[in-house]
Length: 238
Image (cartoon, rainbow, N blue to C red):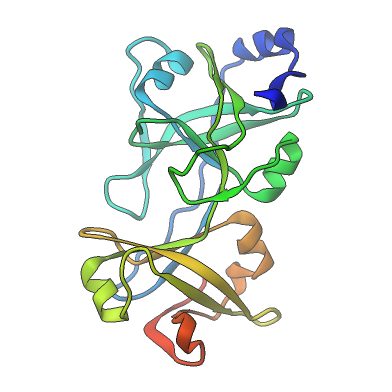
């Protein structure tokens, strides 16, 4: 944890005494079956059961605040402060549920820069050789030895949707975004197919701003080997 050696422990002790409260993220709009939803995934973290209790108190369980677009997942009432080297920190980082076996923090590139961290682009759960950070909650502190990533862009879908689109779990696909000023092709979205997921693309805030997603008039998935022939899956921007 060489990146954390300059953190002032007195500062951390002061932060522990602060009650971290939160702000909400915008939910994805409902979509018809087969309609593509593109969501901006703002900075957030996933916590293990052990770390939930350390940060929020013995016996504490996450409190669902709002359901996410994917069934069974939610934004929790709880937030944490993320502290990087040289006293840099981001307050009120939302916790998403349910809990996971290992805690993980997902940041945009500009978030990582503001914390003074060199963060790799990784698929969720691939945490080997990633930097750590300090998480601060109202009841305690967790020092992660690893787990801070910039989440690679990806698309969720069910197996039936994957078959319709001609892709399989683990494939790569592209996303074309039409907007008035900056029509863009984002390449190498990982296809994450399972039995129950709804069709939804996740990109981070930097990517969403760069492609002007809020002003998009059309979004579509495009096969990599046939970039001029989109999949029969389109939608509108947020």
